[in-house]
Length: 63
Image (cartoon, rainbow, N blue to C red):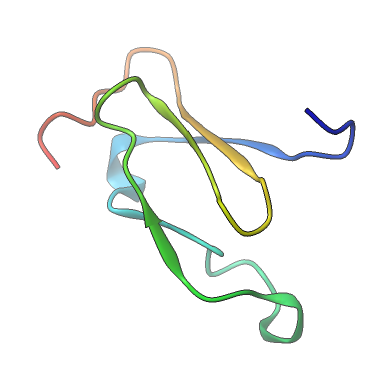
């Protein structure tokens, strides 16, 4: 894993999750991809490598 890879904690209310998120400037974004956190609570964006993980105690099973 690269040193500059971002890890972003998300909550269940942020689901369904996509990367890039709304906080990313349009000029530096890539195509939107939806990420599935329901299996193990984390996922990695295939475009930029940003890591997303559910906050402790959160569940993605209902999404």
